[in-house]
Length: 282
Image 1 (cartoon, rainbow, N blue to C red):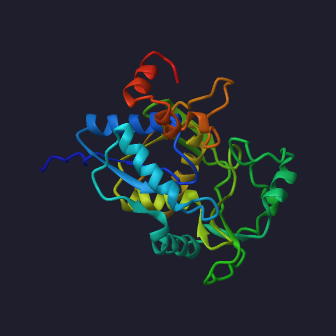
Image 2 (cartoon, rainbow, N blue to C red):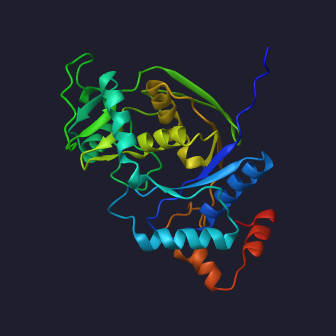
Image 3 (cartoon, rainbow, N blue to C red):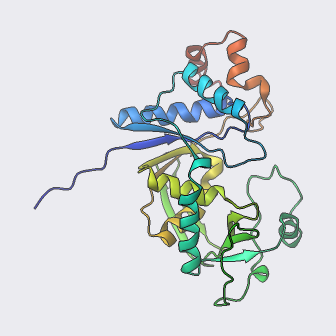
């Protein structure tokens, strides 16, 4: 009997070029690099540039420059999601053929109103999609158009219990239809959602462990359903605690004062920033 061989570790950095990278990105990416090196593996760079309204070429250039300045290294040429649309479209077709998705004409405002949630884009996660908005189970699906001109949602199996052991935060549990509901896989502007593109890419790139912020734990549960629906093996997950500003608000790209570029211009060095982390200073 031939002994099984553990797969070579493959991690990834996946910034979105919608603004300048900040300290939170740096700390998560540094952890990803440390874990890849400790495992003797490889670290890849993916440019998550599907937000066509906000992604800009100058942010891509700044992203690469700031990551290199901070000491981050990747072992293969950068890939961009905007160049991989056919992969996502193929996956959408598979979900459609299996009856996992349905067209949705409801707006975000409709969902928020039905859920009684505040109309606040800063909320950490989207409200549960109302089951009453779904078409009946087994209803005939319209064909996928080219281009896609309507939103398509994944129908979650209500009541299904999902569990995974996060390598950073421990056991995690959620119930589909309660903690999260039906979610977008393709948008009416003919672009894949983050959830679908992330799953397709991580599988195609052979990623064995995803290191990212803990604000994406609920996305992990959604993605586990997509892995299952597409017959793909899911990677391991390591979610990092978020970095907050002095008021306790998690960092976002609007925090220009804590952008890597701003800190660099002020004379801070990567070594000083990492020393702050070791002292418990974000």
